[in-house]
Length: 177
Image (tube, rainbow, N blue to C red; front, side, top):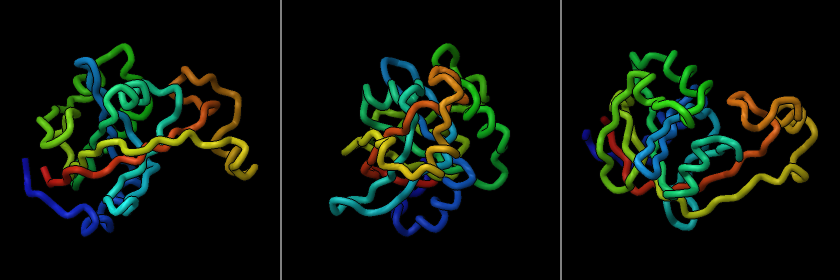
């Protein structure tokens, strides 16, 4: 485990990485899964540092998140194989050990029950303090057309029919790897 960091002081590093893709890891009942996300935000709410991630209703990750209410965010550093992000975002961990298939390794977390990914440069450990299903009726038509067309079933990894759930995770630990 590396050096403890102030997550807000590293926001300028974390947020651009989210836009390029980071790993969201969840775990429950002895099963660990990771997926690529490129939607997320970092800030302060309720006087706490929070990372908000958005996970579609049909994702296996959502099932694990709902079980434990905890997740880690792994921010890749220089030299990280970006093909891992492409693969982690295109296959489901429902029926396979995605961590092993991707050649990744987990490390014990400091605070939460969900492990960190050893190959990432920076880790955020988060505990869900709020979750909110996005309201299809509240979104503008252009966003619905682009991100929620109804032509792919929700059980498919490339699904676009189901909405996202926003998970507000209080950042309870942050460190370099």
